[in-house]
Length: 128
Image (cartoon, rainbow, N blue to C red; front, top):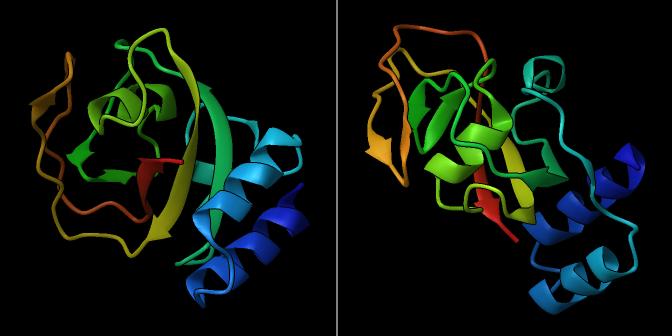
């Protein structure tokens, strides 16, 4: 699954893969795996992109807004970012981002994220 995700991300970044083509891969079950609890073990390469099936949760520790610390609960961050609603299952695109010197918390979509100082890994997510 990871190899397929890397190939899709490669072609998507270069504008060689249209959104409808990504959706077709998703519909065939070839692209998205089940979401991990957080991104700690997947934030090795900045720019890496992953597609996950996630069920939104309002509970879970989240740090940051738009860009989240690597240890933020993925299901809660997905709700905070508006990618899925609480209890809804959907596919999200998660991109590893450069670490920030500071993460600004906020309250969105029923999830409270917290402020945090420097943290070594980060990610951004959006709905597919």
